[in-house]
Image (cartoon, rainbow, N blue to C red; front, side, top):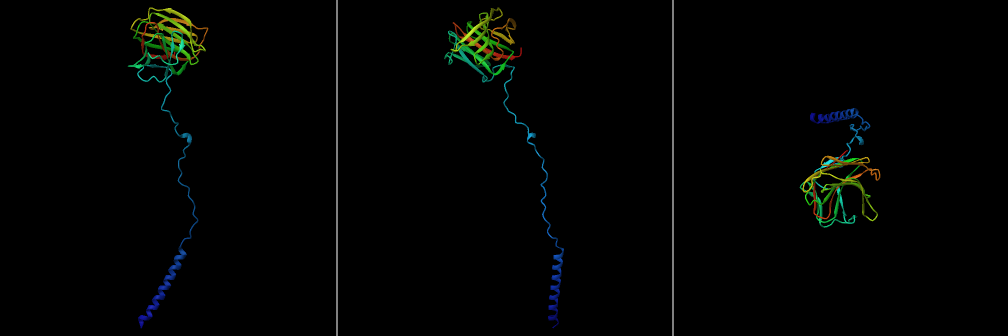
Amino acid sequence: MLRKRVAPLGFIVFLFVSLACSTLSLGTTAAPQPSQSQPPPSQPQVSATSQPAATSTQQAPSKYFQEDFNGGFDNWSHFVIAGKNHQVMQSDPGDMTLGIQDGFLVFNLQGKAEWVYAIYNAQTYDDVRIDVSAENRGTNDNNISLICRYSPDGHWYEFSIANSGLYNILYAEKSPDNKIIYSLIADGGSNKILQGKDTNQYSAICQGRTLTLYINNIKTRQIDDNQYVLRSGKVGLSVSSFTYPPATVGFDWIKISQP
């Protein structure tokens, strides 16, 4: 009998304790707080202007340089004049070649009266000095020319040196019918020109109105042009054949510099 009375009392005690714990638990539970959004950790601000500027891997050709003709010929163009009537030809004659061979720029003209011009297109010059080393590999019947202040419109100054020992300083201009008219500014002769299959160094200076020719480092002629007065343009080279081809000339180097 005692055991029966104890069981209900334990249950009541257990129920009382459970209710008390539940009430205590409810009273001590913290109420939920309104959530507050926290700003994200500050990040370093990068300005668009703080980024390094993009740089090109290609550089413009130098204005003044020495070309040894060990690479390409991309910055040059050429044209041919028929020496008989001074007409600019629409295409190259089949017996003429121009290109780089073993570190030389070689003009190989197998026909008569072929006047071939190579123009450096990458730069335009006001005052300029042109120096070349030219090796004659053909007959003695040829001219080598240095060009300054060339314009695509068709006019330029030309310092033309014959392997025979004569020279001309010329003004050239294209006519409406696509012919070249050459006007003589100065001429003469020089015993400093090494004739035959030999190497010569020629220099031409265009400075203001003054035109100066050097042959093998000797000042040969200086004259002022007060008639045509070209002020700027491109530079170039030329080789001409005449009655007795071939006219074959190899340029070892060309140097473009300030006067």
